Length: 171
Image (cartoon, rainbow, N blue to C red):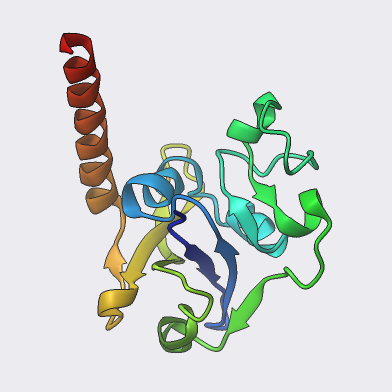
């Protein structure tokens, strides 16, 4: 079962450009990935402009066979419905502002919506770095910071994996 999400980036004029993402949209999945690999606003905007995706990886990547899961790049890069599968009408959607995004960003069954905003932060090289926030469909009254919650849930996910692995060894 997919955990659908929408990824958006706020523009200077306040509008938000966004795209749908189908798999692993929960905080310990996509949320963690966004914090780890998607802090450059230019990279994020370029990725969103490619439209709706099956999944986001660590890089935008190049056109690949959408259904070839044996391609080693499939695990690393974004996989898009238009670019990689040739579907039409899978481009990004623009919202008027974050309130409009919050109100209408869940219209394709998204459980989470993510929003990158420019808060003036810079990375260790002095390059601008966007900050991620999220909203969950069950409490879409505002946006919450992603990073700490995503890391906590990612750690819990890894702990469950180790526990399950240990239990399988015993059995």
